[in-house]
Image (cartoon, rainbow, N blue to C red; front, side):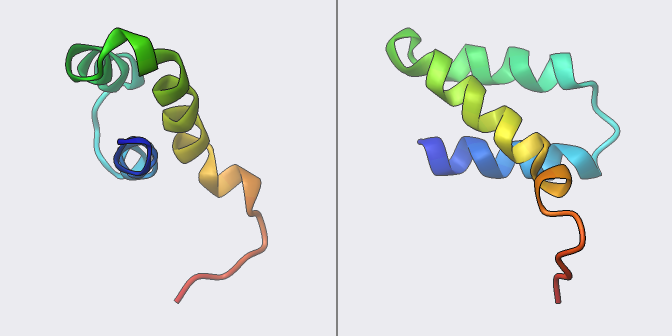
Length: 58
């Protein structure tokens, strides 16, 4: 599930939807026992472009 959530974080940069709404959606579908880790990977995906400045994609 972590891979899916990190991709949701990356994709959230391309849609006009508020970050709080994305997070609320993750909270609705992810079980509580793994929620904290999934929120962390969502934020990693959300900030992906900031972590790799200068890296060119195809």
